[in-house]
Image (cartoon, rainbow over all chains, first blue to last red; front, side, top):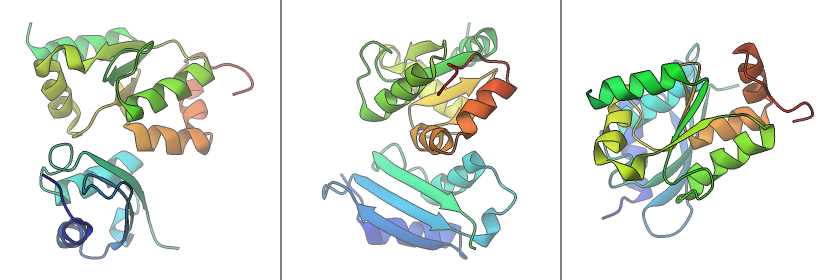
Length: 77
Length: 110
C-alpha cells in the first residue's frame, strides 16, 4: 500500500485551499516523502498546529498508509 | 488503569518523556533515533517509553495528542512535537530555549 505524490498534494490542497505545496519522493516506494506546505492560513499557529492541519487534510492516511512524511510548514514571506 | 490515565501520569510525573519505537539504548526506528540523538547531545535526562511493547500504548498516545506518528516528545506534560518539529526546533536553537524555559537542565554548550 502506498500513496503517490499527486494524491498527497490533492488531499492537502482540499484541506488547506491556500496552501503552496512541494513534495519530494524520498525513497521511490510511495511511502517516504518530504513535503513543504506554505499557507497564509497557518499564521498565528504553532508548528504542532500547522502539522496537525496537514495531517487532518490527509484524512487518517498519515501514520497508516503513509509511513513517513517529513513535514516543513510555514507562512508565506 | 486505562491507557489514557497511564499516559497522563507518565507525562506529568516526568519532566521529559519520549514515546518512541525501541529504547534510548536501542532505537528501532530512524525517526525515534534522531530524537534520541538530539536529547543525548543536549544532555537532557528523559524517560523513554517503548510503544512497540504495547499496541494500546501505541494507539493510545496518538489519540492522547491527536498526533498520528511516533516518536512524540513531551516536556513538563506538554506535547512538543514529533521528529520533524524537534529537529527543526533544535536546529533553530528553540528546543534548547524551550527546555531552559521549562526548567529542564541542558548541557552548557549545546
